[in-house]
Length: 296
Image 1 (cartoon, one colour):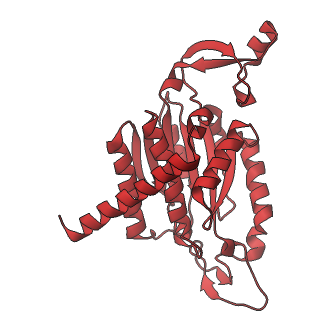
Image 2 (cartoon, rainbow, N blue to C red; image 1 turned 135 degrees about the horizontal axis):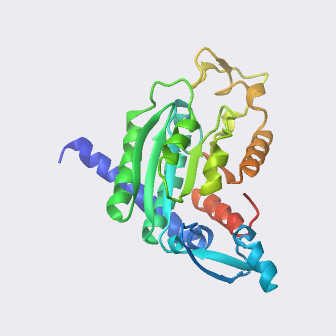
Image 3 (cartoon, rainbow, N blue to C red; image 1 turned 60 degrees about the vertical axis):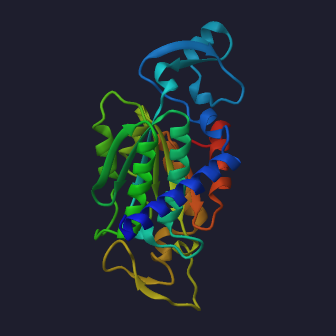
């Protein structure tokens, strides 16, 4: 086996081990109880179970029966999970434990391991200003390994030569899958503050979560410290002490609030993950909030 192939295999195995550690330590039960399939074919109506998201309640049946009921669908038994990963240049930045891309990779790998272990189908899409890779949802360890390998290759190859990321290309690609209902995790730093209106079409049919990756330096500025540079996205934009001009993004809290408001407007979920986070804890909190119906 060639040295580079052996190195890649070791990196893939390490990423899987990290993901499995996350799943076994703090995500046990959270994935299955939170990610509810939204199938095409009606199966049955059943009583609402305390703790389920109120979004699952069928209000017509509830009004008729006098107590909360939810509809279940055949596809709930085998869900189709789609991981959508932004690989534009800004995702390769990070100044704490890892880059934003590496943080996204660990999150994606943890979700992927959970999906495959539960017998779900797993799909993968990477994008910058165009779709870079697209793999239809499939079951089994071969699909898991292919996804982990694809992410490791993306990290090793480095950023593509694009000016800005464009989530719309990913949205259009997913809309080509007619007759499917996916659970979609879109991982991006959303540095342009760009949450396309087109997302409303995805969330109308699919269970969509916007997972925001950030590094504190994305939002920091100082009158005493100057770090000349240029933005990894958007050529010709000067930078002082931050990947983007601070007044362009506002503070982290304001950015997260705007993202949450946009997600709520489009009927989807959102959460933020720092490059310094303990991923298992952050994902456990995200799934717990989803299960309690605290975030959309």
